[in-house]
Image (cartoon, rainbow, N blue to C red; front, top):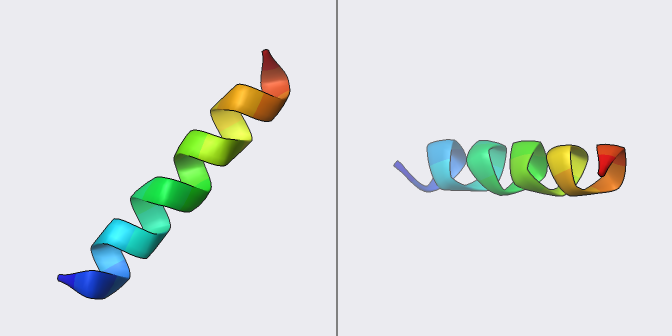
Length: 19
C-alpha cells in the first residue's frame, strides 16, 4: 500500500508541475 501512496504522490507532483 505504501508503494501505491508513493506513486500517487509522485503523480500528483507531476500534475502540479504541468500546471
